[in-house]
Length: 69
Image 1 (cartoon, rainbow, N blue to C red):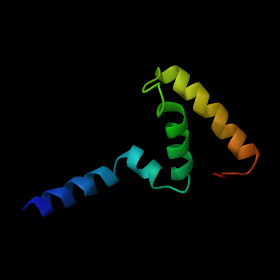
Image 2 (cartoon, rainbow, N blue to C red):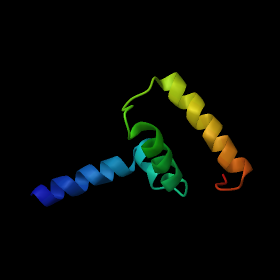
Image 3 (tube, one colour):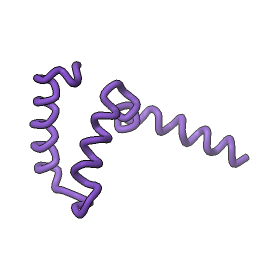
Image 4 (cartoon, rainbow, N blue to C red):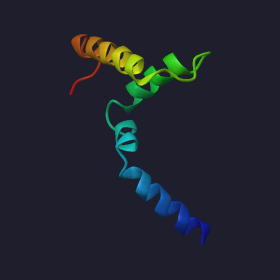
């Protein structure tokens, strides 16, 4: 029974926007950005700071053709 519950949980998670982002083509980029900015001392940032930081970083990655949309 635990297996059925785990499968149902993972199927629900796969439909969530965050999960879909992480398994997308830019998932590794998102994970790398999160790790580089939240893995050391700072475990959380205000949403406005995080949004501004990631917007700028993603724009640079697009300009330098590391990722495309």
